[in-house]
Length: 193
Image (cartoon, rainbow, N blue to C red; front, side, top):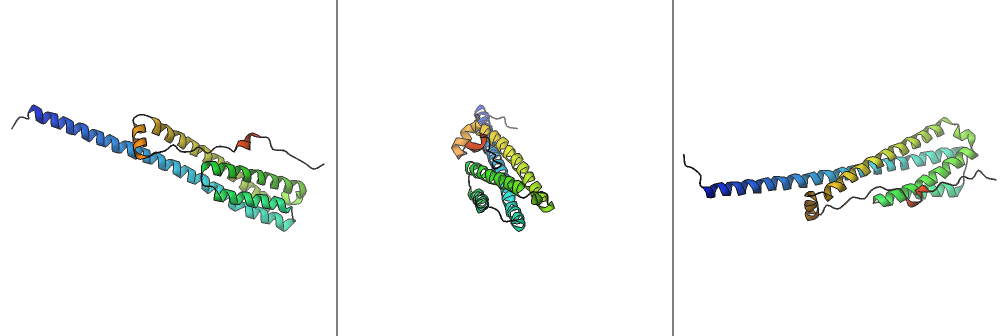
């Protein structure tokens, strides 16, 4: 057997180092891709839950309309807010549209329960109200899961050495799903004088 020269060992060492670097590069890149896809998946879950809630609203409105006519302004506010949710593209737009829809639903539900107590006691109305409440809970969980995933992803693209890969391959920070600026305000309740 022929003994390898010192030069051959150097080339083997360089080749092994290059191979290791390529493996780390591929692994790091694939990890960032997986993290980015997790963010996209969690955002899709939020959109699905918002759409589910938006789809429940026409049934809720029709149930009320069948029982008693109600203020056109309230109906328009709910309809416009629902359309805004469907048009929103970014987490910030979704948050703003969602806050608008939340406010419209609150006004609508309060108006119905105050003005039409018999309807509020009805089985179909209660079932739809429970569905809306369940949707709100699922939306809250989906938002939390999304923001947790965004936190992990954003940390990954900022940590060394993945930050070098993120910059090289164009992995940008993801946006958090944040509450609307007016969400911290206490809603005004008016029971009519």
